[in-house]
Amino acid sequence: MVQYILQKLGYALLTLFGVVTVIFFLFTILPGDPARMMLGQNENEEQLAVVKKKYGFDQPIGIQYLQYLNDLSPLSFHSQNPDDYTFLSEGKYSATKLFAVASTDVVIKLPYMRESFQKNGKEVSSVIAETLPNTFVLAVSAICIAMLLGVFLGIVSVVFKDGWIDRFIQFISTLGMSVPSFFSAILFAWIFGFLLHEYTNLNMTGSLYEVDDFGEGKYIQWKNIILPAIVLGIRPLAVVSQLMRNSLLEVLSQDYIRTAKAKGLSFFTIIRKHALKNSLNPVVTAISGWFASMLAGAVFVEYIFGWNGLGKEIVDALNTLDLPIIMGAVITIAALFIIINIFVDIIYGWLDPKIVNR
Image (cartoon, rainbow, N blue to C red; front, top):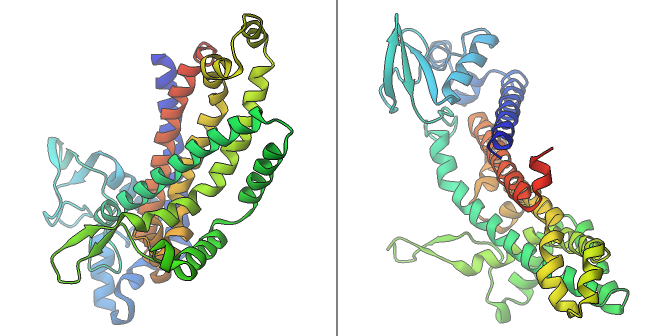
């Protein structure tokens, strides 16, 4: 099992390295001069030179790439020469010095994603730290709805196999998979947040935290999570329902299930004690992919419902060409995607030990 986990970690690091490489070159070469984007309409040659020097934009693209990797790496190398680029030069960021090699300090630190172009030099990591928890809460709520209802509906479909209830669930599942999230978001916001607001008391827009009208701080508004969580959970719910039905039917056709039936066990006892666990393998795999995808796929849902999460922040950054935030957000989502997949691979190996021994 340990070798299996180490192998997965190695693949994860290679994948993350590839993502960082693609993101850097994609957002460094194509958009144009980042120094001009930072200065906007106030640019002049002297200011451009200062900004390029400060952020290393005056270096060849290969050097900039190595500097970006160095900034992201927890173990970093930084020149003691104040004329060289280093994010430690102004003393604004914390790092622990391990030792020095010639004129280079070897430090350990948190990954540095640089500064926003549009938020007065605010660190990208701070922006992500403020918005990611809201997206995480939304994704967890949506996946819980999808998991609980999807497994339940899948079991109900098997119990009433080929009946009108089964066909109705399959129709709803197919419809749920085919409707885009942004369309569902607009529809749900209009129907339940506007037309039926008098009865539902739900808002068309709103985030997890709202500011008190009397300026007494923020408070949590839990009702604002209901509509975006349902909308975000519709498509994975449909997938889980279909997978659960097909997987459970396949398991129920196995020889050991027929043996359990021959022993006189009831149908519900067979499902609960023998079939359910073995049917969850494909469901767990699908849920992991959907949960990781939700962190990225919540962009439209967050924007339509005004949910102040990472997805809405990405849209705002795209509108203002705030490249460091876009790059940092995409890398963060990719890292979370990889971590979640590793975690699910471990669970999958626990559910089916034959995978570990391959």
